[in-house]
Length: 63
Length: 407
Ligand code: SF4
Image (cartoon, rainbow over all chains, first blue to last red; front, side, top):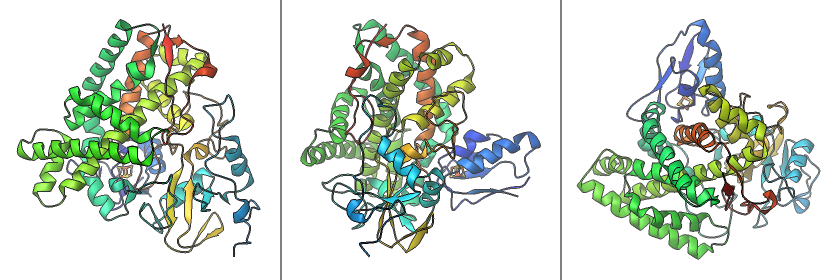
């Protein structure tokens, strides 16, 4: 799995961080998403899919 | 064009009134007439208080699509924006603006509500909840849970966040109550918001002089950098104050009323040490209760299609999250309260770039309340007939006016 984030779209509501702390964080200055791990291990895939589903700004995609 | 019927077969003249009344005796469920519309069509027309007939989008998937569509606007000053009520229509800071200005202002307060920042507030929130329970138990029995617990908790938290002296909380609680009270006139609402703005404007000015480590000081830095006016900062502070405590207070009291009616779920929550259960209970309560029950409001900026229905530029869109969160296409047995289900994709906080910014804080407060209150007051019970509990059918934020409890 490869994860992509679009910082311009992100509204910083943090839903992705709640889903997968290991994969997503937020930038200190403005709360915008920070991708910690672009190729997360298999046990995190379900959490990343949940992050995609709950992200209100469609800022996360996976390939 | 006015004779065209909508997908449910109504002409604009026959469009049902919105919002609709809830069923007698079912204060936790969305209005049955609204549920009927959801079954009839994905998109229908409804009639608002001012006679306008915006489109009502009934399904979870379609609401999410509209709320993320760049062709719709949240601009509350747009001439055909489907407004909730008469009276002076402000923008309520960035809530009523579109990007890029919305994003610019929102990102100034974003860091305060970041998941990791909010997590750092956990000990502080736990202390506030514990002390509020101490006070409840030391006070008269029976008590009104709203006054004695549900309001003080989020008020104290938001005071800390804005570094407002808690001694002033009576003042701003009274004014924010007036702003969302069913019996307030538009004039009273204006006056209350004016008093709050004046008070917070003064605090912002003080923080400009003597900055600390709080939200208003942060906004002060932006003012100094020329990115924000004092007025904009004040508007933001009023928004955060009201959004922060009215919503959470209503969630605490309303979900307690719901749990007291569902003793099996209450017992499950009270007797479990699993933090995961507290988390899923928070999401399920948010899904089930939907305290912002007037529907999200948008206006189409271009001709577009919503679920196959043509919507014209300038037409209003109403997106009721209460029925989206009971959509059987998305949630199995949607009317069953089940605190063990995974309900995180609910739209109680909205969706799209306007989704609630304070949601990590709201979640933290609810989780701590759910893990503390029922355990420390295990024999909590209603002190009145359920039928006598006054629900806020006509407020902007749903909840209970009072919740008499005993233990
Ligand atoms: S959930 Fe989406 S919008 Fe929210 S912080 Fe993560 S990427 Fe940004």
